[in-house]
Length: 139
Image (cartoon, rainbow, N blue to C red; front, side, top):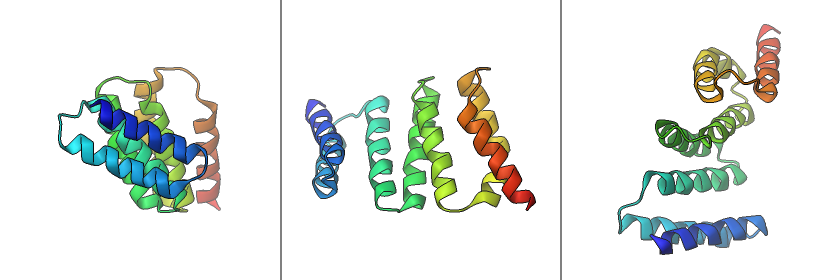
């Protein structure tokens, strides 16, 4: 498990310095190491989140959305506050794919998930995004 975490950290560091090819290679090594052992849900969520980020960097937003969704499901089942970040990434992928109408149709799902995560706290970025989606869909 430590080897998986080290490769994941290596992938994050390489992404941080802008070397995406080495970041992908380190993530592949992390996934390979994770397949040979029991991988705790939180570590699997971290691997999925990193995969989503790297796919988003390559402008493959559909695949990135899938990884962010897996991360969101994993973290929200554990009541982890990091699930909100995955939900934000999911919404961002929808926007980048220019699926405004589909996002508007599924806004009740996003709203429901957000309400469960935030628990009544105000979340201005989501409120602004929702208002923008509504304004765009009316035009």
